[in-house]
Length: 140
Image (cartoon, rainbow, N blue to C red; front, top):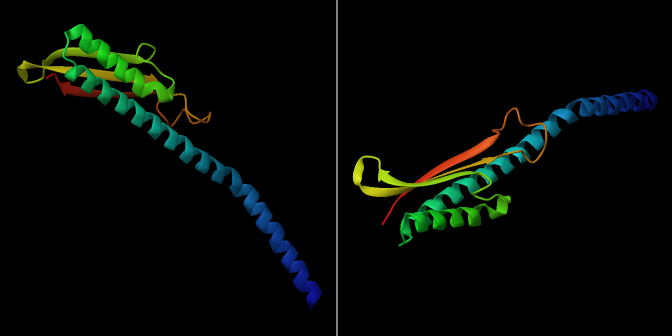
């Protein structure tokens, strides 16, 4: 009886190894997808922070419009430093224009757009190629 039991146990171990080998690629794609998606969310947060910082800096700068634009670009550059991006290299636009719906007030609008390549190759089909964020702040 012990011989038959040992053989059945060996067959079960072999079946488990085959099942693991079949499921491992699916699990690895899932794990790497989660890691890549988390990285994309981190970069997106940096882009939104950069746009917000640029709009705030442009809005509170006491100088003329050129000084406001320079302050906004400098703030965007500082916020994007962690991503090795710069306002001039990325699609960064800063405008000072009348606020929507309020013709008497001016607003600083900052649009930051960067190319996102992804941390792990092969996930470009499900992740965006560019990350864009817009922030608006009323000029004081």
